[in-house]
Image (cartoon, rainbow, N blue to C red; front, side, top):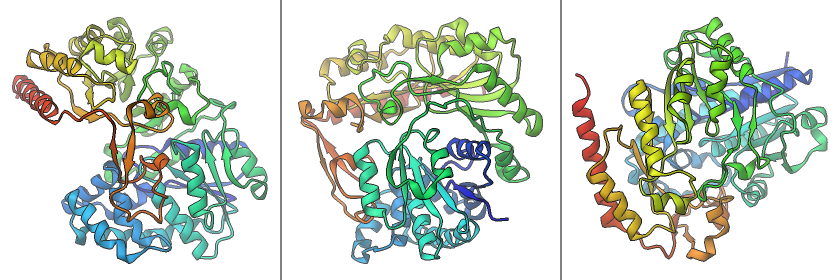
Length: 486
């Protein structure tokens, strides 16, 4: 029987993790009384395509490096201008990708699109998730459905950063898209299901029903069972949505949401984890979206939870040792802590509401408790000063006995953030030096996070200092590795 609704999640979402938007929309669809087909394209394609060596390396690049997947696949777009192919291949070469390998992936994905369109094209409604480098692949599937004569109403939703970008997508791709949901889908999806012809264009989402529909995860776990993904697959859980601090000036997480942090009751999360581990074992999870609040650790203790799950979560540096001890009763956490800077002046400039002392304290707590932890440094903030960098260098020259940073990132000016709002004050400017993605999205200011772009401000890059920071971090990592038991 043809399902009323199909919900497709395409590459290059991480094939080793559950795509929560797909699971959530499927749960809502069933609650509304409609048949649904969850199309795990991102898992199927990984299982079809991935192999050791060249293919695995290229797939990793597509899933982790901005615009690499877009550059590989954009020749499949309707209206592709072959005169742009030299620019496309040059971009791929700069990212260390062989043109032959890219062509083989494109050919495999072309066949995959036909198979997916054949499976879901007869549905009344097709929903496409568009996050984590899925936007262009999702648009390709929408075009393929139209080309195959599908009469399905096609809706796309994801994190678009700004309403201007959402509108640009509809302008460019309105021939294959009927609906674009900007924001959270919970409130608008039932309306689309009930009257698919009555909803058109860009629709603002909402989440007054947040937390009422929790996925069971059974289908995705059945999907990977017996495959090589089973030994690494993690179930995605949503305890909170939106940031409870929401002041860091570089962050735009809440811009596409209702602007407030919301929580699913902790007991519901514990029940979901227990059910997934009981039926599919052994219990690997990741908490998605934003930082877990300290109250979650207290809830683990208050509810008497004792488990041996492996799980990943992001935290702010305000967690105490006692909070972390409580959280550890859930199992074996890997924590990513939002530290960003080791200069108090730098932290104040970012509005992190944290101090270097707090940052080091939480890292020491994790070390003492045997908790695996990751953190990183951010540089290139538009309000960065020489004094902040000097303080950073002094810290790195004589670092404390804690795990070193796992990464260094350049600050991005993202639509919806405080820095984006204040961009004129520091001379923010964007150039688009390569134009091979013009048929994907218009090269406009608001779309700079979706396209290969060169961003500049009046803030002068301090390349020599940045290289010294990188060198000191590398040395710290080497010393740390040398101390690890063989």
